[in-house]
Amino acid sequence: MDSPFGLLAELTYRCPLSCAYCSNPVNLGDYHDELTTAQWQRVLIEAQELGVLQLHLSGGEPLLRRDLVDLVTSARYLGLYTNLITSAVGLSRRRAEQLRAAGLDHVQISIQADEATLSDGIAGTPSYAGKIEAARLVKELGWPLTLNVVLHRRNMDRVAAVLDLAEELAADHLELANTQYYGWAWRNRDALLPSRAQLDRAEAVVRAARKRLKGRMDIVYVLPDYYSQYPKPCMGGWGKRQLTVTPNGDVLPCPAAHALPLPRASVHEDSLARIWARSPLFQSFRGTDWMPEPCRSCERREIDFGGCRCQAFQLTGDASRTDPVCHLSPDHGIVAERVRAANEENRLGDGVLVPRPHRGRPGRR
Amino acid sequence: MPSVKPTRSDRRAADRRRTATTSSSRPKLTSHVRLRFDAAREQHVLLGPESVMVLNPTGADILSLCDGRHTVAEIVATLQDRYDGVVDDEVRRFLDRLATKRCLEMSDG
Image (cartoon, rainbow over all chains, first blue to last red; front, side):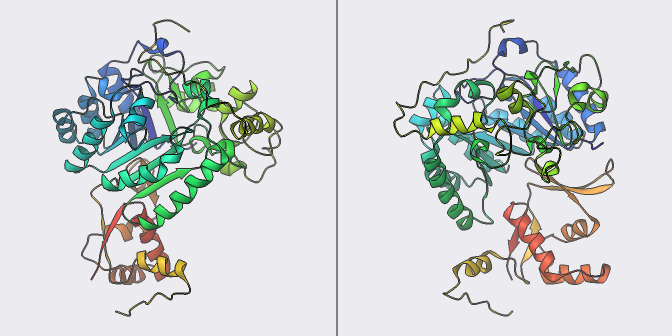
């Protein structure tokens, strides 16, 4: 069995933003009982012992945790490479300097578009100006800067301007991340899914920019899987390279796996090593033995691992089916229908986006 | 150093040369990355922003020479002394790929 390389630590699901494409669970209220500092520190030690080298501090908004600097200090003591994945709301100069001194290695800032009106509209709060200021601060303090823009129908046509902004900010990495349809994004999928024409235009822009900026900026752009022929190799294989710990201590093979009908695994009840090696949640879809046809005999089974289990479950109600985005899946019609609707010529507007709340109501499902 | 003159008829090749790693470039690991030995896997790893690259012994040797002092030609020569079958082009492609990923910076001359 492989050891995981990365731990995604979702420190809290509280967030000052209310993006409609958020991949956090819809039942946010179930995650109010957050792990304490000491519990997270134990998780970090166990992760390092399990072979983890990369720590992704995420959320929600991780800066809302008052112990963030302490957690970075602990992670660096353990030799982990530490990434902060943030909206930048709350990244004051003082806080940034503390994190720098604690040894934080890298900062990834999300922006919602290349200009304030659209960005703030999508984020649901005035945040753009602060994000740009924070991005400059990240560079000033000597960190590598990644900008992350989640792409969807409403900002897809702004990709050229986003690239210009990233260049102006001297970003080292730019992630143009097409929306993945889980959590809140799933609720808003019809309003978010771009058209094929939008994607074609964006791809041409990205291709030219990659050439122009080679060696200066690393640009990651992945086609949304609804438009791909084959599914994405989700998490690099189930229980193979990554694990996620949620704010309340649940351990997941993928951040969307809380939805699967499998017994939950929690750091309150077991060690990370035992959960990784033995829990039904991690064992169910590890390797290729679980695969049905057409995956089982497919020559790509070790390339894309049958795609995303959570997406298969979301679309078909059965997590062990081939990911319906694959054109070979017997359920591919479900995805094809969504794509057809997104490309309808007589589409009546782009629908209404339901924003995620800043925090859910306790105990509400 | 032999000059490389892009031909007008082949723009793609010209682009490749313009950004390619040359023999006299001096590659240096950027401050963003950490090269370290991972005791659990008994292999060297290059850690960067949200990325892990597990290195074979040749890769680890190449990167340990990327200190901004050695030229690509010198790195290739050192590797050829240590290992059989080291191909100049492969080393360059490896370095080029890491430069694209912002793990390496190149200074020329």
